[in-house]
Length: 175
Image (cartoon, rainbow, N blue to C red; front, side, top):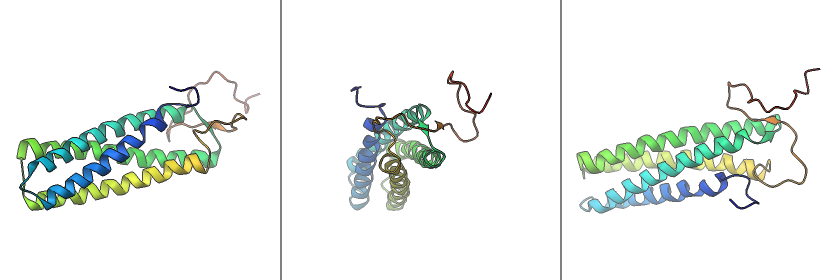
């Protein structure tokens, strides 16, 4: 990791975006040319790679968020981004599994199955876009992941419903 990078999350987030968009394009091509299973299988492997990189981005994002101090307003934005990333990641993990079954178990070229796959991929791309918008807001509105000359104020972010991790620092609210 370069010394200017706070964590690997910013490097990883762009891979699922590119791979999953390419997968949806290949899926559309397979709908237009159903007699060519190579487009369907290419889409399947792109969905698998996209789901794998989405998991890497998801877990690196959890690690990055746990290491950052945030204001209450920024904390809500981190939680919103986490919620969208959670939905999106597990949607594509499930969808990639479904596509593996379509390509290698059922081996379907039925137009209805390909159309349903394209429709589901569009739902996934909407989830992905929402996740990316929330992540962009964290960077451009709240400055998270950007080097700061002054240490940020606030409390560590935690998963909703969990207590903050022990940091070894005294709680300023406890005498």
